[in-house]
Structure formats: structure tokens, C-alpha cells
Length: 220
Image (cartoon, rainbow, N blue to C red):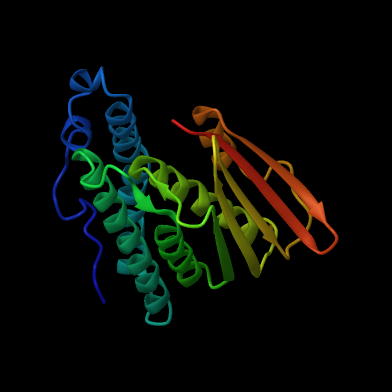
């Protein structure tokens, strides 16, 4: 079993190390957005992962033989997510090599496949328009929103089957339909807080068989 390095394998890094110099991005809104996201990741999610790693290590040291395999699996999942997020931050530090962005279909398929492995649910996906490409910083925000939305419908609604649809236009539209219970108004504090910071919205609907989340995010 791979152990989790609470420092992420690279020691502590400052926000400037992770995101670059904000002063140097004043004339480049795309660069400024990448710096902002990198700082958010470093100061928020990655720090939370580090704290969780210490807690898991403490639990593992005190656990009996029956509990250790489950805790080690949790450490592996956390370690992989920490590695992926640090990879994203590394990508954000540099100017994108592909000025036309990433393939929405390819990157969405990768994100959905990873969430399916982690959650144990059955996830399908669709991306429109066909052949759409998405800037690197927007894809990162989409992946973070998708992870929080999938987590909500599984934990709070008991969903086992989820269909993810993403449409790019002047706005980014993310729709999740699922077979879980009806919407719970207080279920998604983390998702709603992120969308509020980004100027986005989320509507939760009850369907005849399950429910849906409709997320809209203005494109930068």
C-alpha cells in the first residue's frame, strides 16, 4: 500500500510558488484566473487534504487488524486526489501549451471515470457541442464542481446512477440527473459556496424518478 505524504512529496510551497506572481498577470485575465485558482487550491483543498492525511495516519496507528485495510484504502484515495490536484496546480503555473484549450469530451470522460471508481456509483456523461474545447482553468473549475455535485447526490440523495451533461456556450452548463431521493435544500453548502464565489447558480429539481442539479457558470 502506498503511504500518503502529508506534504504532498514536495514540501510546503507558497501561493506565489504555486500560482506565479499576481502582479505580473495584471494585463492577462486568463493568467490572473489561473493564479487565483492555484492559490485557492493551495490555501483550501490541498491544506484540507494534508490535515486529513494526519488524521488518517493517527487512526491507522491506533487501529486494529480488521480496520486497517479500510483505512489504508482511504489513504490511497486521498493520496491519489492530492497528487492529481498538485498536478493541476503545476499546469496552472505555466502558460498553456495549447492555446485552443483541452478536449472537453476527453477530459470529461477522464473526470467521470475517476469519480465512478471513487464513489462506486454508475456514471454516464455527454459533452456538447461535439468537438468542443475548454481552457485549462475552466476545466479545473468544472472538475471541482463536478466532484462536489456528484458527492452531494450520492451522500445526500442516495443516488446510484448519475448522468452528467456539460454544455459550453456563453455559459458553462453542468447538469446531473440521478435516481436518488428528492432534493434536500440544506444539502450542498460547499457547492453553493463555490458557485457564489464564482457568480454561478444551482437549481435542484425533483423528478418522477430521482432528481436533477442544474448548474450554470459564467465563462471567463
